[in-house]
Length: 122
Image (cartoon, rainbow, N blue to C red; front, side, top):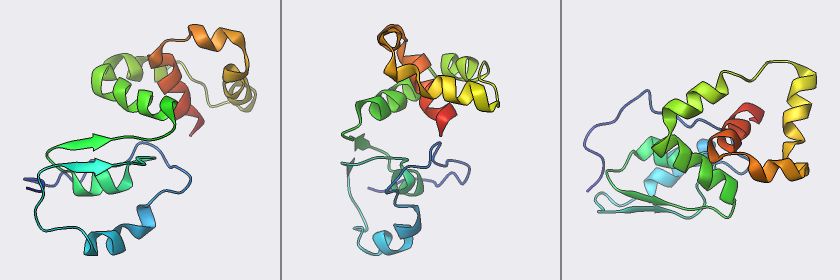
């Protein structure tokens, strides 16, 4: 069973290399009329998932940080929004944040901080 209603404001929160955004019209031609579960093996930015808005979905990706980001959005959205507020739109700051994962201190960052970083860098 596909989605019950389509929420037009639900959109991907990231642009992802290899994204399916431009392929959506073609991909939808091959979708069944009815299904009970939607499985997405390479979620990336989630363009097809957000377009289809299935009632039940299972997502995966080889990028564990990306999957953790989706988990944070599902489980700790308010904390994520609060953490996103601390980022600054400054070139030097951007490069500092980009370097976080090259330092040992990155391991001590919370899932919320790591998700905030991915969204900020994107």
